[in-house]
Structure formats: C-alpha cells, structure tokens
Amino acid sequence: MDAAPYAHITQGPAIVQPTGPAVITAPRRGINPLIPIIGIGLVLFLVAATIILSLIPTYLSTRNIDPVDSYRYNTVYRINNGFLPVGALSADNCATIQTDQQALSGSIRGTSSPTVTVISCAVIGNNTDSGRRRRAVLQPKGNFISINGRATGNGICLRGACLQHRVARFIELLLNRGSFVLTLVGAQYSLKVISATILPTETPDLTNDLAILNYALVLEQLEANFYTQFQTQFTGQNFIAAGFTQTTYDYFNIIYFHELAHVRALTAVISQLGGTPVSQCTYNFAAVTDVKSYVSVAQALENTGAMAYDGAVNGIANPMIRKTAATIATVEARHAAYLNTLNGASPFPNTVENATVPALVIAAIQKFLISCPFTITPPTVPYIDSSSFTGTVPTSNDTKVSPYTSAMYTNDMKVLNYALVAENLEAAYYNKYVSTYSSTDYTNNGFPDASIYFILIREHENAHVQILQTVIKQRGGSPVSVCTYTFPVTDIRSFISLSRTFENTGVSAYTGAIDKIRDPSIILAAATIATVEARHASYLNSLLGGVPFPDVTDTPIEPTQIAATLAQFQTCPFSSDLILPV
Image (spheres, rainbow, N blue to C red):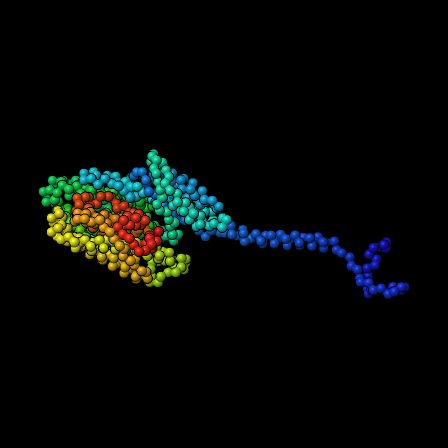
C-alpha cells in the first residue's frame, strides 16, 4: 500500500500505464463518515413514523372528543311493598338512590361508567283513603318514585364508547335489573324500575314549564281558599236544609282536601325545579250567600279548572311535569262532573273537553280576585318547539335534518293507535249493550235517569274513535283494525259495573301515555279526551254508590299494563309492537 493512502486520487482523466497492457480505471472517491450515520438515522425515523401512523386510527377511535358532555334521564320505580307520602323525597333518600344508581353505572363492563347525579326525586301516584269523613284525605300516598338525573362523561369517547352509548347501557341495566331493596325513610322497600328514558338533549329549559305550574298554582290556591272559607262556614245540616244530603257535604270535604293537596304538590314541584311559587292573592267570594250559591260557584270553578289544565298541558315540555298536570286535570274533571249533576246539568256536556287558553282563564277568574302580589302573566302554549308533524312523514332520525324525527313520529303514531285500541273496545261495548236495556230497565233496577247518560257516553266513545282515526290518517298512518271482543255482561248491573271499570281504565291509560308524546297537537287531543273519560268515570262511580273522585290525582298506568288488562276482553289481529309506545 502506498505510504500516502490518498495520493492516487486525482481530478484528471484515467491514467494510461506506460508498460504492459493498457488498463482503464475509474476514478476513486473517499466516503464521508457522516453518511452512514445519516442513513441509519433516516431508517430509524421511517420505522418510527410508520409505527406512529399505524397507531393514529386506533388512538382516535378510543379518544374522540365527545360532542355531548351530559345526558338527562328519567327513571320511575314502583314500590312493591308499600306506599310513601306524595311529594319530594328528602335529600338523604335522594342520596341513597343516587348511590345505588352510581353503583349500577359502575358495573358497566368494557368501558368507563358515566357519573350519575340525581337532580330530583319525588313520590307520585297515590292510594288515598276515600272515606267520607271530613279528614279522610289528609295525606296522599303513592307507590311510584320518579327520578330525574344527569349522567356525565369526561369529554372523550373511551375505547370507542361515547357518553350516549354508555348512558344507553346504564338505562338497559336499570330496566333489566328486576326487584331490589333499598332503605328509604328508615324502612326497607322493594323497588322495581318500570320506566327508564334518556331525555332528549334538545329539551327546552323549564322557564315556561315553571310559568305554567305557577299559573296552575294560582287556580289551585283560589279553589283551596274558596273551600277553606265555606266548608267551615257551612255544615252538613246546612246542606240538608238546602235540599242536598250529608253525603254531598262529605264529598265537598273530599274536594276541599284535594285542592289543598294540589296546592302542596304544585308548590313542592316548583321549588324542587328551582322556581319560586307564587304567593296567595286576596279573594272575593261575595257571590256565595248560601249553600246553593256555594254549590253553584264550586261548579263553575271546577269546570274552569279542568278546561284550564287542558288548555295549558301542551305548553309543558318536560314529560314528567306534563304527566303530573294531566293527573290533576282528570281529578278536576271528576269534581266538575259531580258538581254538574248536583246543579242539574250534564256531567259530561262535551265530546272532548273545552280546552281554554290561559289568557281567557285569567280573565274569567278576575271576578274572584281582589288583588295579587304579582302580575298574572299567561304562559306560552303550545310550547315553543318545532317537534311536530308538518304534513310530511319524516325519514331521518337526525335532529339536524328534521327536528321532528322519524322515531318521534313513529312513537306518536303508536300512542294514537294505542288510544284507538281502547276507544274501539269502549265503542264496541256500548254499541252492543246500550240498546239492550231500556229506560224502564234502568229505573226498575234503581238507576233512574241513567239511560240518557249511557246514550251520551256511547256517542262520546264513537266520536273518540272517529277523532283518532282521522288524526292517524291525516298523519299518513293506518288506524288499527277492530278486535274481537268478549264481555262478561249478564244483566244491567254487571253492564254498569264493567262500564265503570272501562272508563276508569281509560283515564289511567291516557295519563300513563301523555308523557310519551312529542307533538303538542296530539298532547292536546289526548288531554281533552282524558278529562271526558274522567267525567264518565266520576258519574259511574257515583251511580254505583262509590266516591266519584277517590284520589287526589289519578294514577297513570303504563301502556304495557293497560294492554294486559284489555287482553282479557279482546283478541286483536295485530302485534302489540304496533301500539306500545316507549
């Protein structure tokens, strides 16, 4: 090797050796020591980049930004072994329920669980003593607990599961849980979830709902003060002297305590929702001079109450508040039917209730008000929401495409057909038996004057069928077919008794489904039929010697339970999936 290793490197042409054969050689260049280092670095960079790029889709699928940070939900528990006072549960009992729900949420496998917060919890439904003594209805009790809660995530979609998926799984666990035991109010109660629903994220705020509740409270305070004044002024003997009975006075006591309970219930709900209940007004009842004028004014107030609730119920956006209002409305209608009869009027003068908007109701009650420490402002009805049928059947479930989605439309149609099934049964029943018995048959069996009212009930039920069929067709749907019926009627008394069962069941059916309706126009239709069913029920209860209005509020019953009750009387050519709303 040359002593100078790089001496052979030249910048000129190839060298021709002077001796031997000619050999042509290429120029030789030296290797920069940085090049291998750079090459190795580049290879490592490319390998790392490949690995990172391959992991990005997996990372994004497990760490997506969640577009919704919380969901509201509602849960209804049935108490299997007792009753609790109607109204808001105490904070410690709500905390017990929250702890239980959070533990259930924590059992969700394969993804992180949502954080559950109970916003409000209250006992609904009731089992009041319907005796005739003055203090028969002091404390309404119920065997359903309604929970409004919020489930929150952590802002990201973990392992492919965004919050909506996790809350849906939580709801599924609630519904499939079965009966379990919790300690509430110092005692152990067996509970079962009968309803669990994710509330729509676009549900409006409660400002207008609170306005409607306070509007209703103004009416209930008026009624409560009216009965407070005159139930202490008049006695059973005064009623008898005026041509009524001791039973009439006893029933007025029940109405009195109903109205006091309505005031307490509305006040509690308003406070629970963060609102401020209106203060009482001062009142003018100068129109009452004796028992007869007392009964007459009571009739006017109770009929106004029924019409007022029906005229405002479709302004309520929150489903559970709407259900509560509906169950009070039907009791007001029961009161009105009884008082109409006392005053010689028809207990149910209209096919559907004459729903009256708040502005007209407020004008009508002004004669009873001396002054109020606030301005009575009519709330908005129906509620401001584009979730209603526009004449075109929606095809999308994306609320950005159609505010009234396909799912909402389908469920509303199920409610309409569900109501139609019940009305078809009632219409078929009265069509068969009303003409079977004459006015003489009614009189001979101790029911004078009943014939004309059964004819009127038959007309109402057939009209309800026509109304529902028309609405279903106008919305592009198909009314369910008539079923085949079997009625255990053997004589006129069993006919009247089963009539009472059907009408009271009808009230529970409508009030149990009104929270599932999205379209305000259908809410109005359901409410105005429900109060007429309540008027029928009130009359039939009284006809058979029962209390026309046995409870502070009517008990709403879920569609699945109503369907099971009606199944013993009918065989239908369609699946229950067609008529059972969610």
